[in-house]
Image 1: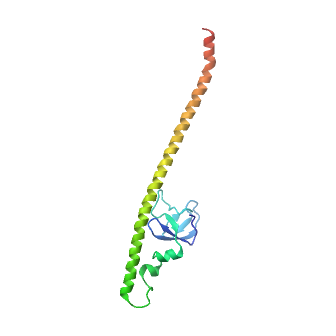
Image 2: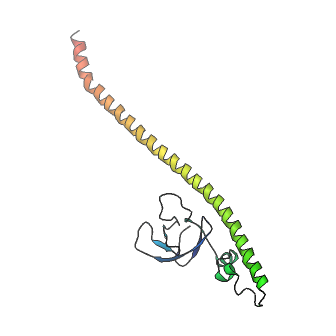
Image 3: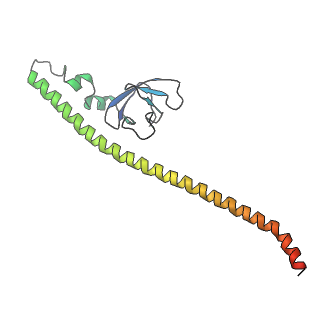
Length: 161
């Protein structure tokens, strides 16, 4: 995913964030409507995976379905008639739908966080292993050089025996 200014994205928590203008920060050039800065790939300015990371673009029809449109979120202007009970029902349905979405997104976020954490630990272990292997190879080269250095002296000793 590549962020674009003016588009809406869903966070791991299920919140909708609109990407505003692009500013001068090289690592985090995008500013979200939640005040967070983001990378081009949607990662929030945090050292680890964050619940505010952006996970997918929200299309306009999804945006309205998710209840983020102010009319849908609060149940205003959805019903022309003055039936207060009907308005309350719509508000409650939207709230229940948002709760379901947040629970699903939290489980997905935890799963993705654990996967990213595991991958980071694996990469760290690989990097440490490469460094240790490089050190061993360096010491092996030094040993070979020293053996080559002592070879002529051993030959001289063998000559006088």
